[in-house]
Length: 170
Ligand SMILES: [Zn+2]
Image 1 (tube, helix red, strand yellow):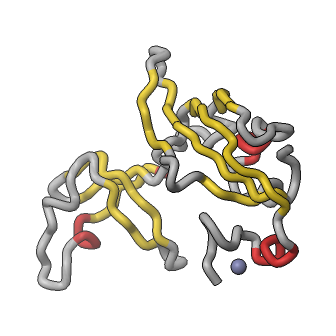
Image 2: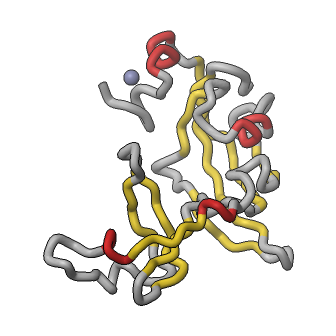
Image 3: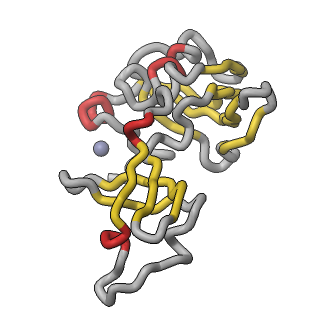
């Protein structure tokens, strides 16, 4: 049964629920590559784990997380207009194939962290990018099946990740 400090393997499918109640498929695991994680140590969205608590191997799940429980609301201040100069390469060229509306582009912030930004507008002198999580503001519909549960080893708990199959090989 799933409670704290278990190594859980599961198959899942994720769709986002649109405003008109239709759903858009996002991602799913396959038989060979289940999602493997340690429960109760903050590896995954807390509300996702909460819906799995008490389940056993072979149990199915089907639940919706609202945006607050998922990746949070859309935040206007995560949409930034950036001068086009920072998108030019060393030769002063602009990569129009990469920097186009709808593309995700890796950007570095002042602290050296990388963020994926979605290009939402390309102007003559500036580029507008959205740094919200791609699933921010969305309700998330998860379905799937629990395929494995075992005790996490003290070493795995110490490292904060799974060892062996589906985890770190060290
Ligand atoms: Zn380790």
